[in-house]
Length: 168
Image (cartoon, rainbow, N blue to C red; front, side, top):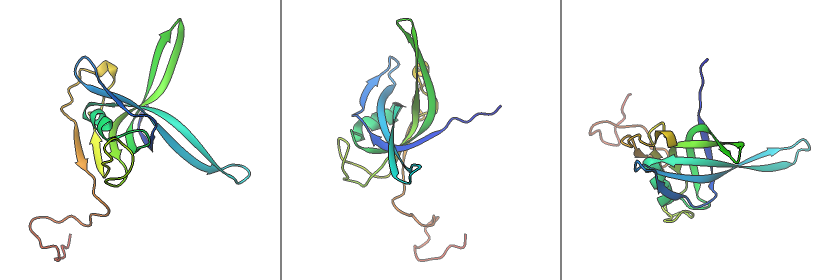
């Protein structure tokens, strides 16, 4: 049977991220994300429900999160679900969390939130499969890309003047 594990979240960071490094030298940070849902209940009244989600970021994405995000900062995170299990004092525990693979900083440049206040359309991605058991994975695939501000319009190739119509 096929399976698909993808999570897309947009919300506000609940605490300042703290950067740490695993023995292999890979950067990692855990942060909380508050995601709000607004819906009508049976009586027709609007009800707001907040879900708190634990997110782990790896590599350059973890470093960027610590540099640009702070408590209250808006963020868009794409990743996958992961179930952590452990045993403490003979009792089995488990927790469902998100391993973030892409981070989009939300807001306008110079907007509020975050340590530096620098916001804008920047996306940051980690290599696709990080967790504590894969900490030796090299971070050579980390990259970020500028997201277009507003509607960038049609792509132009070569040195075509901006006023010329391109038929394709």
